[in-house]
Image (cartoon, rainbow, N blue to C red; front, side, top):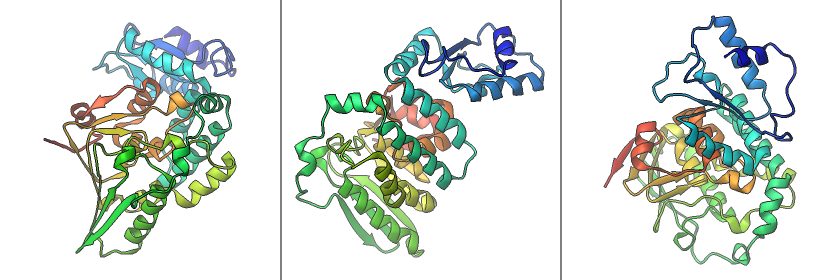
Length: 330
């Protein structure tokens, strides 16, 4: 605890603990620390943590009542859990740093402003070395250029209910440009038409969605243009505007955007087969379909960071316990 107090008393940031330094994370073990600190000391340490240019991890017992736990970016149950987070950070330290900064700064922001920050950060990383490294190893596929045989989203109006079904089962409902645009058009209708009392969204095929279509990653002309497009055509912007009427039903894989988008819903039901994962850090990116905004508002900033840094899957039972989904059915 003395090292935390000493660090908080310094106006300087150590470049060693940064995305450009030797150790792009900080790790603090709170299990043996004395939690009795005056309020002004806790506030000072919390402000210092928020200024760091790297993720700050605390190892804390699951039921820890340590008064500082909420100040940290992410909590680990033990050393093994911490190492899983550290491996993710070491794989993409710039993306990990950016993720923590976005989660910190957007926590108290209105949703629409927070989505703008997420998009700007995502665009920045698209021009960074970590994403370029992934893209060189995984160039856009020819399938991204092939026309779809069927509409990527099926849209049906039944009385006061608007039903949307993701419809790329052959691609496991990967979110393509066509799917994004059809979602935007349908959601624009929902926002404009107050007679629509419920928007029900589900997915055809084996799973709800495996997230963004990797065959289209890096296909935008440049990151700045990609941000401009997201400013106009991001489903999350509209989902947030009609969230009180949104009901999602998800099943099997809910990965990346397939997890981020449902988190905007007022009600999310999941099948027992559902599982959830945020893999974006592996690509040198952060969640970019609104997940930096929707997920913390459902499960908290620290659990969002844990999912993104570890890239670990959670099952439907854990999702229910965390509040990511509201009901689980057979």
